Length: 89
Image (tube, rainbow, N blue to C red; front, side):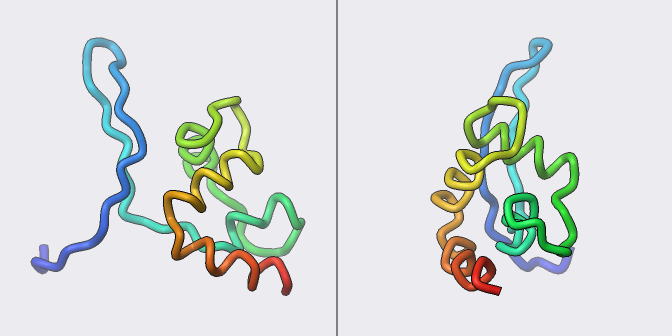
């Protein structure tokens, strides 16, 4: 630990098997990767864990879709400012 701090995004808390599970992240997903499945670009796709997490914090319907993208962008406005630029490429 180098004593630096990083922002943490709190996504969810659930009780599973009698234990509380906190879903947090210190990573931000870049706009290009968030849009890859919608635009069919050659950007590295989201990992399965990222897709699951985005759906969990989004609409929870079992797949990554625009509802999940919207929720993520509302929770991470700095990423949202890059979406228009990424979509125009």
